[in-house]
Image: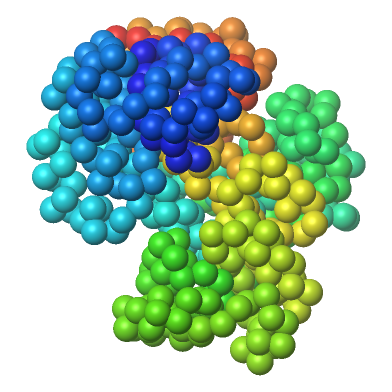
Length: 449
């Protein structure tokens, strides 16, 4: 696919590097020459210096032959204008990244659609939604639902002494005949394993599992986890992510929100109806104690500084908070953040890539999720008539070794994938895949439209 990415944001850079590694022809346009030189030194990207709101720059980037334009600037106005111009100049599909909430109203979405922008994506809104979902499923480190919760993908850390530790998948299947879940990945010491029948679970493993709703409680029991109810919540950072999460949660939880900037704290006090807004630095241990951090059930740190988010979550853990969530934008920090005890890491770049990646596939993709803990993706494909995946039972498919089918949703019911299952046209199929298998999986689901 011919893809044009514009902007010098971290999201633009991450998407450019991700997509160029998947056999796409990617061009990156940015106004900063030094920024592009840095990228050219370690990638095969085609780069172009210039202002993407200049029509001649877009023409020089061959926009009329472009199948997908991703406009990902720091300023949402530039992203919007670039996408509108690109569509008028002949681009097939245009996506604009915007941060500003005022551009994301239903009225604005309709207007921008009429002007040629196919999709709007807000990393902050995606991150806030993830926080909301995680606080309603407290035992999971990550969770993603498919087709109105017919199936879910959960990440659980296996605790010492958990019933599955020291057992193989084959032994677990023999011991528990009725299984409403399937392990699709094990992350162990920075290595991702697609599990086979004789793979052994170890304490500390991070396991991604596809489960039916009626399998969640048993799954948590086997991993040594248990759900708990969140009543008291502390949020650090009153930016777009923190404020949106607070607004969504304040009617359900007792929310305390820390914001260092006095003017912003006053704005939030007026905007949030039930949340208690505190103007102060959450890195101050005495302040945390005075605001009863030890009585919190969950602690969310979403400032613009990853180190602050990691530190404050560790302080919260020290005070006995059960669930900690940190916004960590430096991908290199994710592994170490989890190893030191932070329950869940959210990364806006990965969250945005999850939304956009589906538009680069030739098969029909209903939803996608870039996984924070591993360099992998989970897809929800719709099996097309005549596609190779519908020709044979699952065990006989020439499925890539770096991917695995986790479950199938058929006629509104979720089923855990088994070797003898035959996928049918119209089925929604949940697939876990490492990047090197994306292309092979995509081909198997490609069929008649």
